[in-house]
Image (cartoon, rainbow, N blue to C red):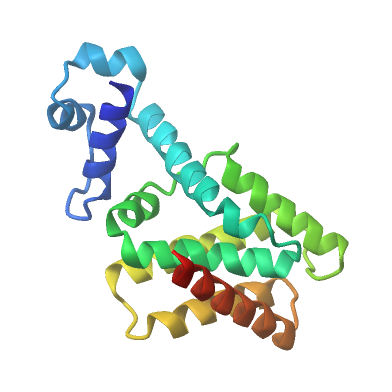
Length: 198
């Protein structure tokens, strides 16, 4: 039943034309009673936080076989961003939820990876920042806004756009132009090769 509630919430929340989603909307879409909703969630916010964590954690776990084999923080950051942006282009329901909800919980698998890659990059002197949270917000903010652009079709050249988002994000973290381009080129080729193997 919990999964049914979350599925209905995602359907409703991912619809750009639906400006607000209420508990009443969710119980109608899930065809459940109000009591059933409250058996699992105390509020709509609690349901959205649970769904946000589930969606971002599942995406992170889905990319682990491709992502976890990488050891270079710049390659990991650029590959992770590319995978999230590519999914937004091909799965607008998922992207619609992620960009509208803007709910990446304080504790999630995704944040653990982002923080880890940023820390590793800083310790190897590949990245230059003084505030880990600001650096993580930069990476996540660029990724979420990039997903919004991809989902809404606001760019004519999706590949060029993804390249630029990744390069600009790395550059904002103190990466040289040459190294940012190299990390982006690696991610582009690496992800394309993995897609061919599917």
